[in-house]
Length: 198
Image 1: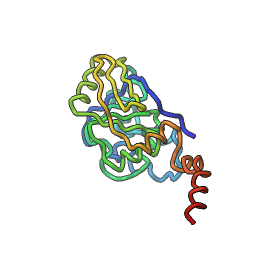
Image 2: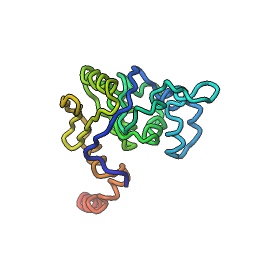
Image 3: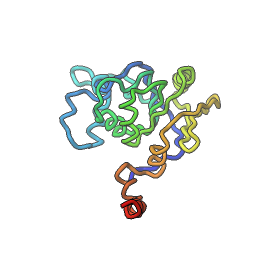
Image 4: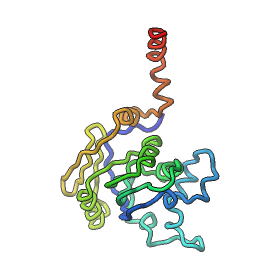
């Protein structure tokens, strides 16, 4: 069972870049691993942006700037485009992000995030712009993501927006269940249905 989702209030890490693809999220050379070792993938999230060619830390990249922290990633439009590699979602979760907020997600990546207990929250471009500005002005600004009510709130302005999520995935996130856990939890109901419909 995974950590259940409810209401998350956190500071944000801003990545105001559009069309960030899965190869930028986790470069292809790290895809040889076939098991999900969260620390490995989290350590290599945005690897080619976090580190210079000589292996030294890129102090200008947002993950390396101490003033920015939190479990919410603010991302530009069209986040997660490119290949369908699930490793990208593994890397985001492995780093410690629980929520990604963007104005648009690539569909496959969005589903991969949900399957790996990362909540993709799609908001309007205007609201995303406001969030980026708020965090730029104050890195300690807080954002609340309320999964039960499907709202995201900028606590600095008290502006909120609703977001959509598949009802089944919402149930799984709030219950801390992946697809297999869900089936096991409903085993008795499934067996009753099978007996009734033989």
